[in-house]
Length: 631
Ligand SMILES: *[C@@H]1O[C@H](CO)[C@@H](O)[C@H](O)[C@H]1NC(C)=O
Ligand SMILES: *[C@@H]1O[C@H](CO)[C@@H](O)[C@H](O)[C@H]1NC(C)=O
Ligand SMILES: *[C@@H]1O[C@H](CO)[C@@H](O)[C@H](O)[C@H]1NC(C)=O
Ligand SMILES: *[C@@H]1O[C@H](CO)[C@@H](O)[C@H](O)[C@H]1NC(C)=O
Ligand SMILES: *[C@@H]1O[C@H](CO)[C@@H](O)[C@H](O)[C@H]1NC(C)=O
Ligand SMILES: *[C@@H]1O[C@H](CO)[C@@H](O)[C@H](O)[C@H]1NC(C)=O
Ligand SMILES: *[C@@H]1O[C@H](CO)[C@@H](O)[C@H](O)[C@H]1NC(C)=O
Ligand SMILES: *[C@@H]1O[C@H](CO)[C@@H](O)[C@H](O)[C@H]1NC(C)=O
Ligand SMILES: *[C@@H]1O[C@H](CO)[C@@H](O)[C@H](O)[C@H]1NC(C)=O
Ligand SMILES: *[C@@H]1O[C@H](CO)[C@@H](O)[C@H](O)[C@H]1NC(C)=O
Ligand SMILES: *[C@@H]1O[C@H](CO)[C@@H](O)[C@H](O)[C@H]1NC(C)=O
Ligand SMILES: *[C@@H]1O[C@H](CO)[C@@H](O)[C@H](O)[C@H]1NC(C)=O
Picture (cartoon, rainbow, N blue to C red):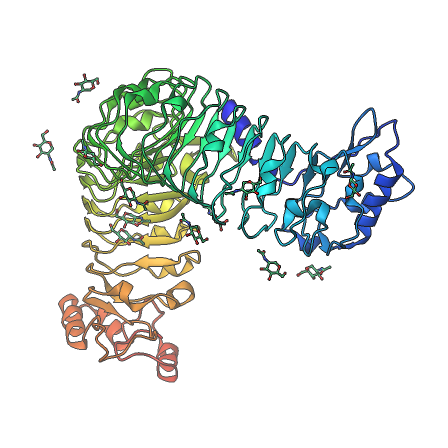
């Protein structure tokens, strides 16, 4: 895991604003270089708004101090020559003048301009770094030393200037997140030392030129999110450890040379046009941690060896055409944290050896053809946060388990569109009350459900759950989304739901839920989506707060509901079915026939209001619908 973080950090590093600490070197920087930098500074005003992130750099630049101590300026230790200039996030506003003496910085090897805010015409000396509008050649005394060029997010536009690829000393080239379009120049030679090449998120197209595959020292390659097509060729470099080609239109097999690499760490080829089967040679690189091959057209079966890979942490084969059973045995002591097999044609059972994946955080087996009972043993995975088994052929009641720490860290559970039945799994030991926390307050021990702290999404829609809606749901105050639609649930909507303070989406539609909508639900101010349609609800629709923003359609198909809000599409004859008719209401109330309900009829069905003359007065002097519910 730490290794992953390290590499992630390394890959993201250039995109972060870097704080560069000024170095206090014994040697003074050459005067002409200091003057060139000061002249450069004077061309701009500082505007924190000019760049997305702001980290003032040039503020500290002044004649009285050695330029090697200025922020963002790094000098060579023995000669004092400026070798690195970091203007990332510096908030510079203004334009380069063409007469800048930038060429004085003859030893400059690294220039960081990410999010610098610079605009305008760049002087010829550094035109290759920024804009293709200037077609001068790079002065030799500037370019030949350049080893690092990071211009990600510098808003470069146009065709990739070919000369960038002729800086023969480059070790690190980053031009990601620009709009630099077209193919990469094909006739590039040299670049013997290039280790890191990042060209992601541009609009580059054509085939990936063969010189990239021939780079002898390449370690990290990122060409993702472009429009490259054609095959991936064999790589010459033996030091590659991260290859990211996702979001292109590449096809053909994974080159054998990649699978022979013993240091390969991350291989991302998702969202391409790859077809054919997954050969078991994919398990050859023993160091592989990330295999991201989702959203292609892969078919055949999952190679047995995948579960035996000892370092693999992220396995992503979603949205392919893989078939057969998940025929693998996940080894004990494995590193898997993410397994995503969503959207294939996998059959058979959920492999029991998944219980060996003790570090698993994300498991998505959704949209397959798995035929099994609920794998409740997954609840024993201590770090599992996201579980999706949606759209399979899973069945049977979901049994509770009395194991402690059951689904201890679950945040998202999606079991929708299966054949699960029986009572909702909301009892003491299942999903919601996974784990309890004992809190002692005022001398009393209180048992609090652990789920209180997390924001939970639960989707049990389109199954065969039955029985009553348990009021215990109201205790799950961490609930953000609950979808119980398309089941056979009965009972009433528990008043306790008003405690769900962060609830954003609640769908009880297409069940057999009766009774009234509790007035208390008006206090659910986070609620953005509500669907109660196609149930047996009766009574008045609560008014106020969120309830005034909901559309009528969420109440459709409840014959006993009254007091539909006068929303824009509401009207007696515009095709929206009216929820009720006065005749039906009278029948219903007469069935009950007691004094209270008679008073309710008198008062316009009361809706929980206090009975009295004053209310009749209010009723007469304010607006009520014909059906007797408050507007
Ligand atoms: C930066 O943006 C803020 C908020 O939009 C504005 O108040 C401020 O004047 C801006 N500063 C400059 C120097 O443009
Ligand atoms: C270095 O660059 C400056 C400015 O562009 C130029 O005048 C000078 O001739 C160059 N020196 C060499 C040796 O190329
Ligand atoms: C060059 O600059 C002009 C004027 O700033 C602009 O209209 C044009 O699009 C630029 N060309 C390229 C290729 O960026
Ligand atoms: C190949 O590179 C040379 C100079 O490096 C250039 O003049 C030429 O136009 C390039 N040819 C193609 C086909 O890109
Ligand atoms: C893909 O690249 C385009 C162009 O730079 C960018 O706008 C978009 O956000 C990128 N998408 C992703 C997912 O990185
Ligand atoms: C590459 O994109 C440009 C437009 O940006 C288009 O004119 C050209 O035909 C594309 N080339 C290929 C090989 O798709
Ligand atoms: C994907 O590959 C198939 C051949 O396997 C080809 O016919 C199709 O045009 C390709 N699609 C794209 C978008 O490149
Ligand atoms: C996989 O797809 C190819 C076409 O891309 C087809 O020829 C082959 O029969 C398929 N194999 C399986 C096992 O479905
Ligand atoms: C599972 O994979 C093993 C090893 O490849 C193979 O021998 C076995 O026949 C496979 N079983 C099924 C049911 O596909
Ligand atoms: C699930 O598998 C059993 C046999 O194991 C079979 O009888 C049943 O029809 C299957 N269910 C579905 C929905 O395919
Ligand atoms: C729940 O599952 C259904 C069907 O699988 C899906 O349409 C819906 O978007 C899911 N998510 C939520 C939040 O309901
Ligand atoms: C709940 O799930 C159903 C399908 O099972 C889906 O149609 C509906 O959009 C979901 N509700 C919400 C609010 O996402």
